[in-house]
Image 1 (cartoon, protein in one colour):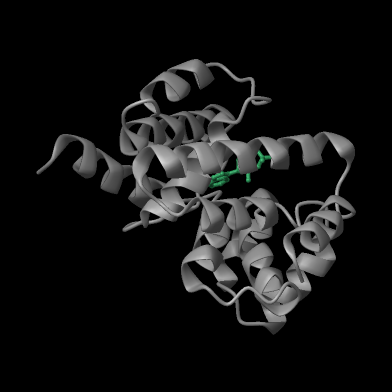
Image 2 (tube, helix red, strand yellow):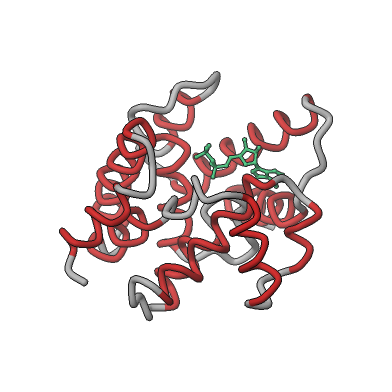
Length: 189
Ligand SMILES: Nc1ncnc2c1ncn2[C@@H]1O[C@H](COP(=O)(O)OP(=O)(O)O)[C@@H](O)[C@H]1O
């Protein structure tokens, strides 16, 4: 499948508003990749596919998580987390993506994880700060991203964790671990 066919297929999986978001993540991922020395082509490919299953019915995602041995603990947490892991699976199975770094960038774009590659950080950060995003603190993330992916991502994770605490929701632990890892990377020690 070439880039254009992939774009058409992904576009058909979501409403127009979400497609605008995906285009924002594509452009921002390319920009960040160029700024910080990652491969813009791979960053864009991960961005194209990152939300491919975002609008799938819950039952369809749950079936894949169960049948394809994706992490079962996902089922104990917010469904928002599922599309990232299911998306990576579908990127490989249906879109023929074999590059493990691209698949991981899709897989961890919502939660983050410890030891994120530069590509993973870039797609996760682009998802937070692409131009159509509008939430308290987004401009701080954008200005930090001028200089440091890690600092900007730490601000993003802090915001997500704070948001989840305020809403009384359970936190998928990978994000807490990712946040701690980012504190270490930003501050050292
Ligand atoms: N560690 C986590 N634990 C539980 N829910 C989470 C966690 N991280 C993210 N989420 C949920 O995922 C949402 C964001 O997911 P994301 O893929 O960025 O979706 P969107 O693109 O719609 O913002 C958050 O608003 C939150 O509800």
